[in-house]
Length: 185
Image (cartoon, rainbow, N blue to C red):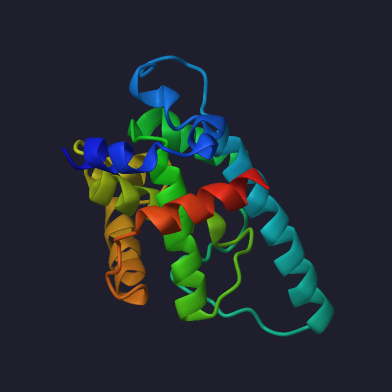
């Protein structure tokens, strides 16, 4: 079991319990959301506000990708993350790994995280994290429904994301711990 061995190696940190990553294994099915969800939402919201101010102030054109929508979705980032968690049944650790993937994508592509691209980037990165990390996960059609995109678009987003990060899905325990620490700050 890939998830079990990952937890065994990584659960030595206090930040895991602070983020709600350890409780998940024995409280599966409980409606309480792990802390990692709200912390990730907060980090992403702050990043987007900073990026959008910077783009507006510099009056530069934003690089448009397949992840950009024509307008920002009505769901807040926090609501969207909660929705993904509720309907994907993925482990809370997937959201930390998705954050790692988002960072890799942004660094590789040189794009800014904005209100126009964050939702599609989130659903794609969480889906990839679940496929890589969890023993059981849903197919692309299910994630497309959860994310509010078509299956064809989800497939396209997945491929574009994977090529953008050179298919580098592995995250070491050290990297995972580092991102957990950054979420706690």
